[in-house]
Length: 335
Image 1 (spheres, rainbow, N blue to C red):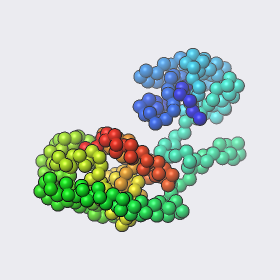
Image 2: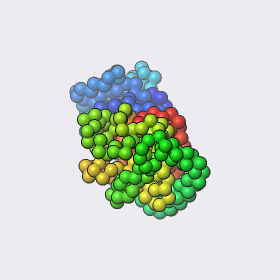
Image 3: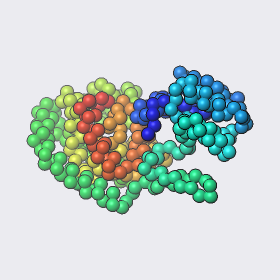
């Protein structure tokens, strides 16, 4: 398994930023060794050496010197025009002879390791990428668990749901439930249920608040939205307002885990990449829920949803449900 220090010979800026900005991995970038004369400036990252543009006798000694100087455990290599084929293989030999592990960065992104299978053919190393799950036994199990979980949840939470319904009804004018058309799997519309957390004319007031939107992309979010009622603010912080969507799960419109269902006007503004979020059923919870919710930028939300769309599994769903309990208890990003 990977350890806490990583050295690589050439690190594209995007990969460096991802490694340094995220904490959901076991790698820490401690130094970088560029290849060729090009500039490679990375904040807070030292560069103990540089490899020549062409293969040189000191390739291995330069990299090993950086490894030993920074007590690195792994060399992470990004292949490129100046570091391919025989040069990369010889560097690997030297590192392995020196007892240092080597990892090669792939151009693939957003692919779970469980979908990748390395094979060897004609001396080449190939990476077979399994297609995302769209049917089969896991999809059947997911559907059964969704319906059973929703039914159990509605029965077990019936006293709580009744108490919340009464508090919403008695605390402010308007209906108990807020029904809203959302776009589901394959962009099919359905009516989503929530406990009402805003004043009755909230949709009409939204246009006046457009300039106060605090998120990018097609979403509308305000940390202190004046349309939210006092009871609604508490329900949103605990996500209890979302519980009526168990009915949507029971009816097959939604899943327990998946991307959040967008409004029609939001979905109409999706580009090709964003539209891929609608490939699977929307969920009551998902990666966005356990990763910051409304604190996330739009692009961060899309990236998390696309990861889920391509890499979901029943086991991963169970893990996300468990993490959701912790996220709801913490309340971070809920407004």
